[in-house]
Image 1 (cartoon, rainbow, N blue to C red):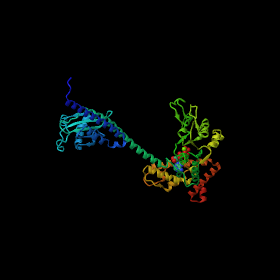
Image 2 (spheres, protein in one colour):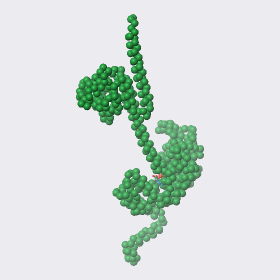
Image 3 (cartoon, rainbow, N blue to C red):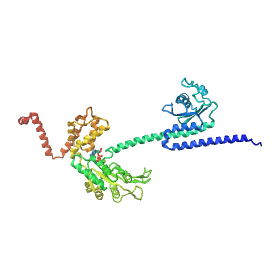
Image 4 (cartoon, protein in one colour):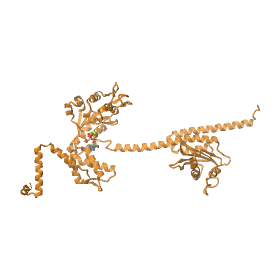
Length: 509
Ligand SMILES: Nc1ncnc2c1ncn2[C@@H]1O[C@H](COP(=O)(O)OP(=O)(O)OP(=O)(O)O)[C@@H](O)[C@H]1O
Ligand SMILES: [Mg+2]
């Protein structure tokens, strides 16, 4: 075997060295690209980085990266070493149709003749000779089957072409880049969403309805002022609290305030309406259940007591709790332990219990419907919220507050109530309490015509309700009183018609 001469060997070694150096450079690029992309803050100039680096590695004279827009148009996101107009021209006239025809990647030694071949008109006068690159390599930025854009490289001098190896490498890089671009886009969208959600949370947090404070129940009426003081000291004590009051008086509101003013404010607040859950479900709802504990219990589940761990649980309509659950509730209060349905071990829970009811619990105890021991356990601190009709001085301030809140929410310029509307609000007995008042204000705002004041005619028909409520009150009076009242009404009406002359009134009968 003839030994290759020294010159030949040197050439081979030089070739190999160049190849190796090239490979090192590519590997180095892949590595630095990965590092670059791993930095979320660097993603901002991803396009520029990719173009600059690939132009340098592939020893190109210029290149660009274009992203696909909403339609199928291409918009250059970064251009390097080439005039932007050239990139735009080739994007629009050459690359968009190529993507559509799935003709990428594309490697050509002579771009001019490739354009000619595809019937692309020669660029106009604005392109000086030699502006178009000569050799041309374009790869799609494809993530799965979606083409997000293209990455393009050009070389200007005659005889300086891209190789099939270049095409392979650029395609590999483009796949990586496309995935990163897709992720970066997703990340940016998620960040934007998180920011806007953050803003909404802030808004909600600053909204006193969602995070009510003591000021919410401080009012003109002495009973409510006293209640606010009681709430304040009850909150600090951490003891079990029983809230009494008619429906809609603000028991849930007070329970929230208790939670927010207590040391547990950082923990959860869980509200459960014991009267609204079917008897068969309430135990697993409150205490949780093991997997397969009953039909339909496909997965194990923590109950509401466990969910409220570290915080406060409001047991609304506590009088409706079935007897066997009253026993279980007692053991939560006394031992701070719960047992999931279908399990035979207890779990510790640290929960403050606030119970609420509009029923007469003491009467329920006497009637044997409510356990006496539980009643005493719940009845450590009792707060009674008076019905709205017993604190009439609160009606207008509350109505005005609701009006201004609701007007702000719905962008309406309504500033108050007309004197006649105010009078009607004061007259009404509010059997549904503050909740009813809020609904009435909300409905009158919806029904309202033009003008800055809510007029009497804008209010929903309160009178019907109020007169039936009056009839109700009347019916509780002794019959003789009612008859006397009726007679008096007839006489007064007759006097009015007669102009006040008693003799004539007697004739009118
Ligand atoms: N003092 C108040 N200031 C502002 N809003 C109040 C006040 N009291 C009650 N509300 C509002 O009235 C509505 C009813 O209050 P809440 O739900 O607390 O009543 P509740 O006594 O828990 O009623 P239920 O017995 O039906 O559970 C809520 O929209 C609440 O925000
Ligand atoms: Mg409630």
